[in-house]
Length: 494
Ligand SMILES: C[S@@+](CC[C@H](N)C(=O)[O-])C[C@H]1O[C@@H](n2cnc3c(N)ncnc32)[C@H](O)[C@@H]1O
Image 1 (spheres, rainbow, N blue to C red):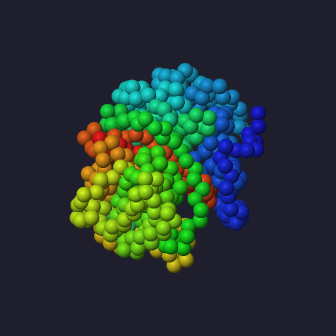
Image 2: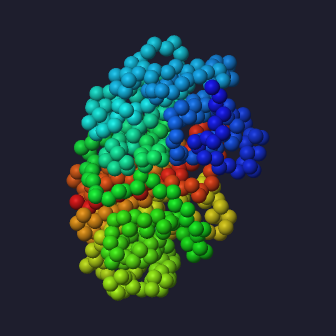
Image 3: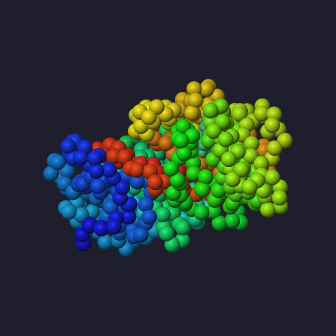
């Protein structure tokens, strides 16, 4: 069997000039892949078409056939029934297909091996497919299993788990997040890769860890800790929008989301004539999408400059819309300059109630990360790097846990203006800083849908950014994926 997949499941995307740079750089210390093949793996989402390819590509990405000291690499695969293993150009690969129980996983790890492994890859899709199985796993086995994996691995090498996203579609309790947070007790969470399965919209996660200590505390999140509700609408598991290039006034803002995607959610969760709200309106994308869909669009924005851009975009959208609903009522769009942490202090907001809210916060203080290539490009073009210098700008909060507290507070304030049963969608991303993964999307869900909070969790739609070029972060040394999937987390007001 050869490993030459002509059409790899990891879609290609690479820049030739960067290829040159890498060829002249240090030797590849992690695997035997040429630059182009490495870059395919950098993308944080992929369309899955066979387990065989998934296993082949992960084994060849996370190991070298023979390490510089002459040792052949050793991989342990647990689960993945039906795959064929081969010698992968000289690698030693043990496969414990086993059944689907955790006992099988545990016994696969407990088999005596005189040598430590370079890569361990575990398929948990069958054994972890509902909340009851998760709760049992967390109570009885999680700590032992993750501890055994750490012991089985050479320091700093990688392991991966394939876990279903949730019970079905994007809905139900987020099983994979819980597994990831629990494994941090023994392993460092490096990244997630999201496998999209085309035929039925199902998704699963490949969670990758390194055999070292994590910079964040582990958590055991059982199914009783997130309150989940179902809605009578089909919520898409993922979307891959192709937004048009940003117009000059939109580029002034460091991060906006595509109106086409927002419009899709607005149509899903509201009726014509309903009212839509965004507490952090930025350039006004939410209000523009609402107006295009014949809904009223309202928003609050802290920065005078962005509020002004939003106002002018809202005015143009109203003019373009013909200003009419089907029942001849005028479409309304309003932008309030104010602080989302103090919605009560905005007089115009007092009597307003909304049917739906969609919003995207600053992703913690990520914009002040001077090392990012995006930031360098913006600086070179004389564009604004952060949203503002204001103390009340939540993007200027330095401490992560404080940032989450403040966001929780903002969305509690939004709940007071949402009609009962109204939906809130938060568009957000897990972020990395200094090699630590801060699970912003997961942490926020845990807060907003805790049993005592104002919302139930409905599910998630991945916004897969296929229009963003890949960057060769840490190539040849470590896997630092390009996080190109964002979470659109849907909550329903209790
Ligand atoms: C990710 S951006 C939103 C972008 C917007 N969705 C768009 O498409 O243009 C976050 C916005 O939150 C605003 N913001 C930060 N702190 C705020 C606060 N306390 N109150 C209101 N807006 C705030 C920032 O100025 C920024 O425009």
